[in-house]
Length: 496
Image (cartoon, rainbow, N blue to C red):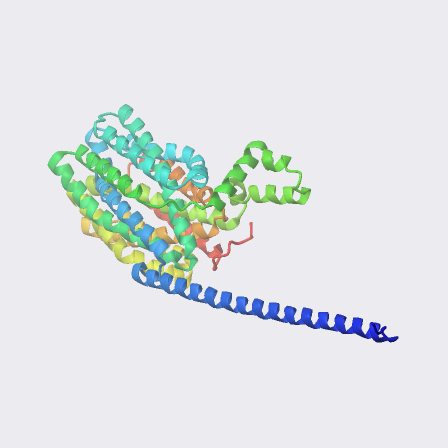
């Protein structure tokens, strides 16, 4: 056998190495080509799925949406507003019924004020815990349970014949109202958060539905009182509350897990002045992370923190002035119409129906105006109209003059309510909407608590049945002037 010459063995090894390298390079190139092909295929598949999803979502939105609202907002909103329409048919029936019913059983203006303010006491106490419950346990349970309690309270009111019986039943009504209103305000805020650019029109849509109920309700209430007596109106609103509760039961829950976790964290921080047992024991949580979690857990949904903000204080004044106008509607306005101008229960009902009809026309227009020109402008102009209407109503000498004046007030109140609610939603810190929205609501409830008493005592003390309306007009004017300091945009002001 021939022995390899010097150098041939090295050349052979070099050829083997070169061949191996070429083989490896070929395999690597084929693998890269395969991966590139897979990526291209995945991209094409992903694009096809995205296109299909977009097409399907667009078709659903186009089929189910209204006013540019996506289907996950339009559907629940329809159910919510349809249910509330049933309720406000009943609420409208009570507008002429409650003050005239109290008057029919011999209550003075002061005692009538006590009966009307009784629900606000329970609401003022329960707004904060129920708002926190809405953030932790869901909006829907509070809404449904609240309606059941309201129905029981109205039945109890219908069988009451004295202040000692009426006041507890009206306090029970406040318990139900606190639950359902904390729930439905947070529910509406959840829907608005999905399409914040449509916040004004959504809130105005709710006000429009309420206004329709308040147009029809007083007509029914006045005639029910004349035909069957005042208790019939309370049985009617109890049935309406049951119907609304049934409607609410079909709503999907809107509380997100993120909001629930934020509320749980804040509750843990509030109870233990810490971030909670699990976070404290977590060995992987740094001190900076603990401080950040604690700070977020105490996020500015607490009332004391909110009150440090100037915009929140102005918002409270506007909400209080708006609420005081409603107090006048339930107390001094119907008593002025019946006592000073000789209006019958049916005529008082007609007065409120005309007012609500004007509000029905106003609400959707002002909702669009709030989204277009800003809520600050709408709130200021609306409260100015409220002040003018109440002052002119206090000076009216005929039913027609009172109707025109209270009509102007109705236009203002219909414009102010949605704008104030939309502004409150914008100023509420994320993750604590349910609790934060109870602050302006509690201010309004405080006015409902003391307002009827103040207005009743004022009318009795000065022996003038228009003194209460004049006071309400002055407060509305003051709130209108204060709107100058409200923010122009949806970003909360940092001023304090």
